[in-house]
Image (cartoon, rainbow, N blue to C red; front, side, top):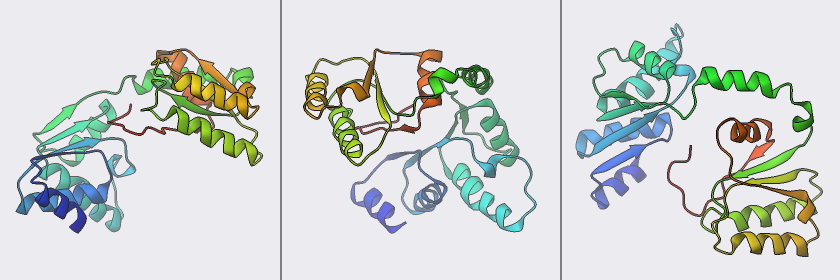
Length: 219
């Protein structure tokens, strides 16, 4: 609370977009009482949003972590129809609520999952996944160097890198680095994917890593 308060006050911040946790959202809503700024909260799925709660402790949690921050904010952005409806059930007098859906509906995602479960040959391969622009900024060198270290420790996973080469020299550096350590064959380079083809890689990944040196709000 005090750290957030100091940051907002000392930097005279006029707007905060929060996609963090319950505690931080509550702290921000309390700070907003004493220091005016625009607060936007990204609202995603949570057990506290689902169904009726009879446990007193959970009721208090829902009030502190959901109702107070949402009522205090200037805008709440929900990521799906179900999250939007559940939020309305809790905060039925919420006027600053906006639905901005994810890139894929949950129903379509569930259909894909059923299909993916049948793809045994794909699922037999344990791998670490990186997706995004292939560049220094996105930490391509980081994931390759880390992967090399864990292979040396005996990890039997492979690495799959999915994305478009930004041609900043990072891809060539990584391939040379892997070659020098004798593990170039442990890494699969996949060109840019989208939609179902991309979700398949996410679904079967054992570990997904975002090693970015700078990042906004990844999907």
